[in-house]
Image (cartoon, rainbow, N blue to C red; front, side):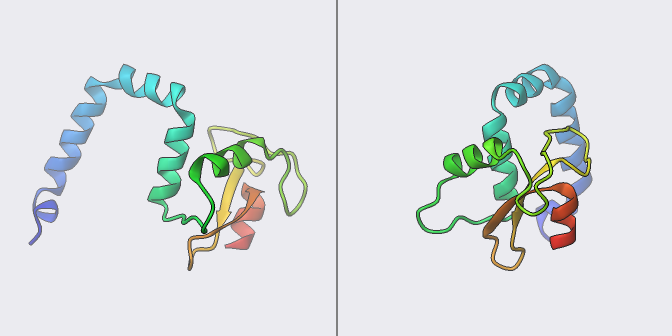
Length: 110
C-alpha cells in the first residue's frame, strides 16, 4: 500500500496542526495574493490552457468580466456560493476554458 494511504489520517492531522499554527500567515497570503490563489485552484481542478494562452491573461479576463456570457446577469465575487457568483467555465473532458459565467449558468452547462 502507498505511504499516503497508510498514513492518511496522520497527514490530515499534520496539515490541520500547520493551519492552526499559521492562521495569520495563511490569511495574509490569501488576502495579498488573490491571483495566485485563484490560478492554483484552477490548475488543481484540471483546467488546461490552449496554445498562446497564459494564466495571467486568463485571470485578468476573468476578473474584469462584469456580466455572465450566457444570461448577461451582473457577476459578483461572493465568498459563499450564490447564483450570481463568478465562475470560470471549462470543458470537463478537455479541460479547456470556455467562458466566464454566473454560478447558475455554469451548473446548467456541466
